[in-house]
Length: 133
Image (tube, rainbow, N blue to C red; front, top):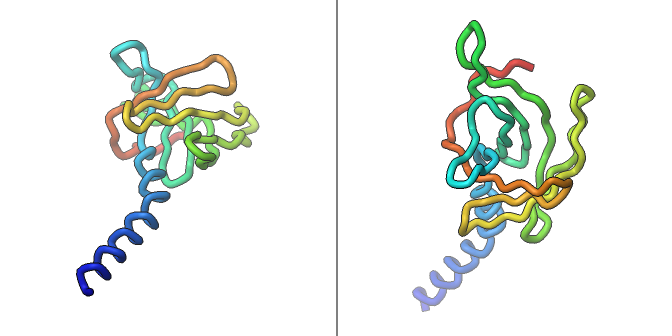
């Protein structure tokens, strides 16, 4: 009786953790895929962490050394198997709503909207440096 109760409890916990655990696997730094490589430095990348979307230039060379520069900030959510980034409210560089197809097995995000279609892959994750805003 105890073994079946433990099995039911374990199944319940796994099912309850499936939503947030699946969402957490998307967190990281994503760069545009260029064939077998991924552009991660001195180009715009997406930083996805805990429901927050940041568009940034990482490792930008300055006279003070490499810096991270934030270009836009928004939020993201999941709509079924799609990642949806809300429109950026930046006055300097507003961005429209973006929709990505998430392939967790292949480790890729494909931007479907707006055009052009782009494929993103994970960059090596690291803590962000102090950001210029």
